[in-house]
Image 1 (cartoon, rainbow, N blue to C red):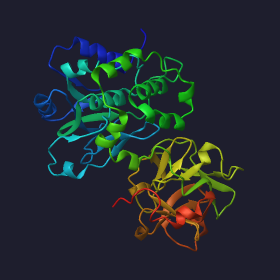
Image 2: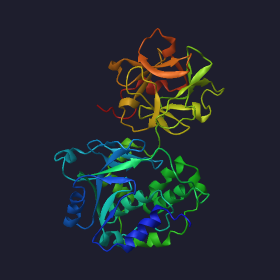
Image 3: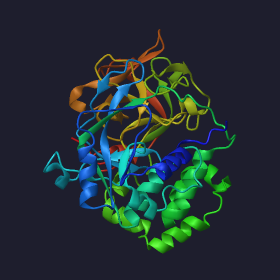
Image 4: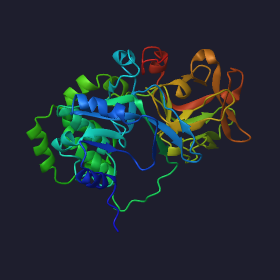
Length: 395
């Protein structure tokens, strides 16, 4: 049998459902106590409301259940990675009350069958998976609905350590899906997605006639309205064009100038290390191309992950970039050549273990060459204006 994918499966289930409310859950989830009533109440009050539970974490290897944080609002960046925005002041007044969220995480939500079909369900031109959470979220908000997260509904989700399925299409169906969503719903802002990924230009999104007619028939609002009214802080956190970095290129150890930081082609939760330096200082191969970004984190181009460390003497690992600073905040002191981790008063710096070719966080010591680094490119003006340039500091 041919793999039809998530989107086709959900549409098939929605067509068979006979209840007033559709509940969508991934197969790899576990509902918690009293999970259902908080999803239904907002819909009973207004059928054009879509409600998402708080998604807790179930470890894929141990099945340990861990509660998520106090909640954040769903969003995206201009590579179409799912991101989260802080709660707004009004959201904090009653921690039990559902709050508006610009974008759903994707797999878990409740929606009235009437409203789902008024919106045309999912765009059936979307294939397998990818982009469906953006399509439905934009459609809900722009076409007269509301999307909320319900703190009192908790559902655990197993976050897999690897993708168990291959690509049955032989083409990048996710990029195609993203382009369909962008072309139909994002208006003039679609171009900012395309600027970040050259694959968009080469991708045919297919026939968009039916979806454009749906948007016209429902008299949906423009995407500019969505950004201004529903996600007013998104462009502040994620500018449409990535601002200039503080530094970039290869990161060379002063203690042994033959060695540079290297991702070692590792993925999230795996350590970075040291490897023989690439010859190109400013534009090395991706596994040695690091960026001290506008967000005050250090990113590696090979997999768009960030350097992360929790405690003193920890080995530095790669982790999904969260733009919340904390464990991922770094600053380059070009006078001492030290890369400082976290807030300065913590006194932690990036340190090379030349013998083991490992990278750790040590107590800052200006006389220690193992804590001194040369970046391929340094923007001295931005570093001199560290306090005013870059993302807003998060306490």
